[in-house]
Image (cartoon, rainbow, N blue to C red; front, top):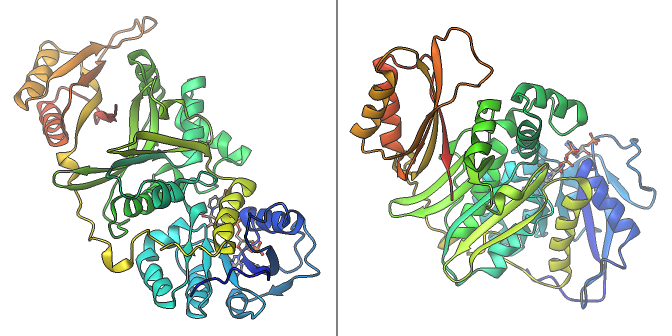
Length: 438
Ligand SMILES: NC(=O)c1ccc[n+]([C@@H]2O[C@H](COP(=O)([O-])OP(=O)(O)OC[C@H]3O[C@@H](n4cnc5c(N)ncnc54)[C@H](OP(=O)(O)O)[C@@H]3O)[C@@H](O)[C@H]2O)c1
């Protein structure tokens, strides 16, 4: 289907009137003339859906059709485009999107969980019906990362896409670094202030970042979306000691999602990362997000901005609506579904990079030398190895904190060396390992 570039308004139905949906509805109702792009149709909100019809959403619903069942919004003849802002990787959001695509209606969604789980199937359905399925708001909220990958870099070879993709994690890490306080204490405060959910698992354990990364990977490398076969490590294990050591060594710790082409496949990984203080991504603090794209012609470009919030996310939905109102019909995943290559995973054990290792070394003669020996046995070259007892720590000691920074090495070697050190009985806790990026 091609959206006709006519003078008639493009009639928009919005399902889900929470943080993003209500902000979008308010913008469409109050700014539709300003939001009309040059040569494009006027955007007109005609119908909405939510669970509770009586809730005050901060805008006047009296002129709009309210659908108690979201699927009815997709079938409403007064709706040309369906915007899904319900959320969830299954259930009403999925049914709504499927119904809208069957009805031959373009769909816009901010739902990364849905797309990570069912994106390929939905992209196929959109292609079959020849309608667009757009999702700029699903990755990094207000940052135009999807269109950068879809429209700005095709023809170039993307070698890497990485980003700070979860505002909750970045907020927590920023406060841990600045205030020297523990993860649990910042999390409790972030929950009180509304920066973290009551159940923070999805954010702090890296799953939200993984969903967004899966979409970026597909767009960057022309591969099928693969969100289930990914290395994921969250931020719970980061301590104030790691923060302090990172700063002293000239790094800042960020939760990064990285997709990187290697000789054996594509690395998709989500984990805390030490970034040099002078790097662009290290400057992205608080709830901000950023996406870095590396291509053969451009080098690195970095887009940063608000990764969440009603207005910022609604602005990305509006950018997609404007594309439709101009008559543009981009492919959901840049390439036709049939041209997407299967995702070939590069094993995490083959990852090459620098490593920060913090060990709690049992205080007995020869431990230090034995640790260095284990690292050497696995061909790991050390940039530095330092004992980090604080000047204030003067009592009798059973263990010594030791920080090791490696030169570039293979993950497998680091893991095997750590297994050896643990077996030798020279440490009294699981080693803390943080990967170092350029
Ligand atoms: N919040 C952000 O900053 C942000 C940023 C980027 C992407 N996103 C994505 O945007 C989507 C929406 O997020 P949100 O934060 O706006 O969510 P939210 O505040 O929880 O709002 C969800 C809305 O969906 C409605 N809803 C639930 N079940 C429904 C059903 N069966 N039929 C119709 N409506 C139903 C709810 O209705 P009631 O109000 O009546 O309960 C509510 O209005 C999610 O996919 C999220 O991942 C959000």
